Length: 330
Length: 186
Ligand SMILES: Cc1cc2nc3c(=O)[nH]c(=O)nc-3n(C[C@H](O)[C@H](O)[C@H](O)COP(=O)(O)OP(=O)(O)OC[C@H]3O[C@@H](n4cnc5c(N)ncnc54)[C@H](O)[C@@H]3O)c2cc1C
Ligand code: SF4
Ligand code: FES
Ligand code: FES
Image (cartoon, rainbow over the protein chains, first blue to last red):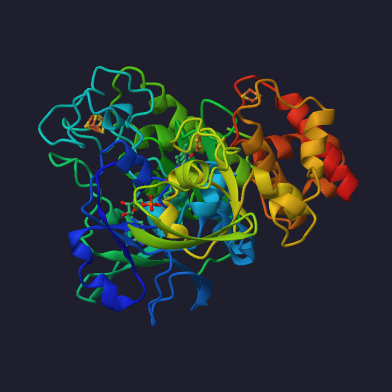
């Protein structure tokens, strides 16, 4: 690991210089990447004990009719939160589908959102990777790309976003609250936070250097049917091949306000907005679900090993919609 | 070098450490507690599992300097911890019940993963007792309230121990050891 200056962040005054380095939260992704010397920050700002007077980083609390999650709340604590389990079960299920119990005890809400791809060529410094080293090429194209994305990719990069938590959050329409090094605040949707690779895959998101995620806000939730499902190569402790978070209401036999987010298929959690629009107000049927989701994937492009995702993802979501709406007929 | 205060198995240490040092390397190489093992050094195997402030973590993906003021329990300290005392390792009872159960059930072969399995297992049983959720039972009724509680408990324990790999494949005996301690605690 390359040497770095270590700063324990106490309060806001320690964040003024933060644009000169990187934040350390649970460290489960950043330290891994620093050991590989893929991330080589000169300065590390350890925020694990940071205390900002007006922006609590460490707790889950009600906000209006929703919930505000401090950026340092661990994945384990968030999944155990009574409020989350009762009102946002899709989020508890997604959190508990990720990583291992040990990792979830360290992994934080902010760090989970900004974890980097698990593309094996990104991790291997002997291989070409535009995300790690812009302009070198992409060894995943034509290489082993079973884990890779089929939607939202570019000629430069086909890496998938690895988070489970973020997929559930995408379906719940969360807002991400941040604080820049100079103290200015802003609030972003996940579609605004994450960049698609285009010709600059080295940039995963739009945050400035030194911009701290302070919280994720879950909006009020009318009673809805929710589920998270993850397809992977082993029963536990493996990243998603395809995952999906579905939130839907049923009113007088009609579908209302369907929200469908997919993991493992795109460089960011993928909202199936076209399918959502088509499903709104319809009477549920298995055939409709499959057809709508298949259309959502018309633009998908496989790269060989990951072609199967283009069939698997629509079937997974159609099956979940069928279960959530208790629909057995075509 | 960064100053660091760390309590390990009840003993307080005042240290100065290179910020690059992992908690695992510090405990093994500086404090000479070599029970925790380095399997992968990348958070993938669980051999380095320690209990920090009551929670199990992978000590290989943790910078030692970020644990200032924390209380760490390693495999060398689990017996004392089970006695519920602030004892040092020297005065501790010989074995934690889960260590004893591992011996009775022959829950290891080469033993490389064992320290991590036991630390992880102790924390897993505490998490179960506190009703902290796992994916298996988060959206159901919990294994205590269903008909085939036995099969569900098996699945539950497997899921809760999924962060610890064993390349010798001692899994069935590890699960048997865990069940024995769990039943004795009820
Ligand atoms: C073996 C293994 C298996 C895994 N399996 C899964 C899985 O199945 N599903 C899954 O979803 N994840 C999985 N993970 C990834 C894990 O969930 C992430 O590593 C974790 O969520 C990152 O959180 P952290 O707090 O440790 O982040 P860190 O490693 O501390 O930080 C990650 C990044 O976020 C930045 N950052 C952290 N906090 C903030 C903040 N508040 N504001 C701004 N920037 C910030 C850091 O600077 C860094 O760039 C796995 C990890 C490992 C090692
Ligand atoms: S898919 Fe992206 S991350 Fe993977 S090798 Fe190509 S450029 Fe790098
Ligand atoms: S050595 Fe820490 S998880 Fe493998
Ligand atoms: S006993 Fe050999 S790795 Fe588990």
